[in-house]
Image 1 (cartoon, rainbow, N blue to C red):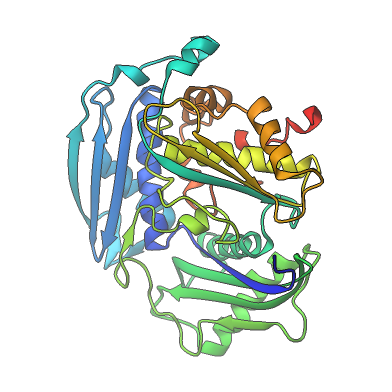
Image 2: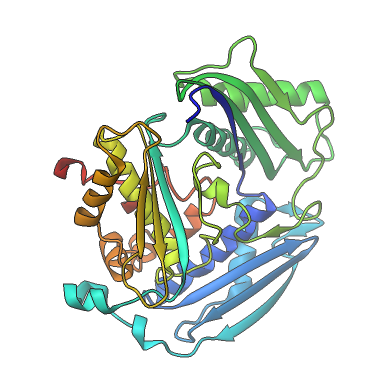
Length: 394
């Protein structure tokens, strides 16, 4: 296992076309579950110049206006340019009703242990959860800092601190590791697209981004940029307008950004646009919950939990743990602890995390908030899979 290496992760703002699609898809999930917590909905979105395409399959037990939701999200993100905005963009839909599926028409709050055991998954998938002690959120430092930069870039746009910015932006952070711990910041990249016809010159753009985005992000960070850290802002030319008029977007295309920035493995299945009966979404949350509790309990400095599900089984057919040589006990012993103290069954995960009721409990918007800046490692949202309530049992 390498101890000294360089690692880079990227993030994007919520106005990036791929993230815009994730937000629209999850806003639709929120609206379905708000009307009916037991709704089944799978939705995907694509955007391009002046066009939004929504494909959805759902049980017809809720009255949801797909086009209106999409327009609301586009407006909220901040797209108001003539070539793409919530008022004039064309929205195409392909909607299909799902047949009733009684197997998942259950109220998990009333199920006995035996009944939970009888509810099998309907998808086959291998999901991963990861945690480490590099940051307060138990996340790898490259993706942690990349998310902070992307969020701050979005903030200065929405608060009109830099009024010329458009919603689309990218960030990237490269960290130099020594003995598998962050040692220094090798480089920082910020790509900030502009929408105003009165754009600043290149020097002013660089100064603005350094002052309003980069400096605030690193104010309280233990590891600071040094004199050798390369800071790259929009290469040598402004990024121009960005957004769907420049590059298209698609739901589920940014899985690494949604999870661990490629520092750990992640599933190939999209997380956004799926109701809580989809194990390829909620299994990833359960795996993160397990990995985070292991690291928080100081059983390992790094922990990756792998869960493999097969159709027709209620439990994962395989649970594997990798601590990359940092475990205080063996990986096999940690695996046994997970099997004993954690519930990885579909209905058990839904029940423990209250996944069907979170949109109504959080005032109608929960899953949409996950669509940008990560489904895991969030300290701005009280996520049930981020709590470390299992630490005391080890």
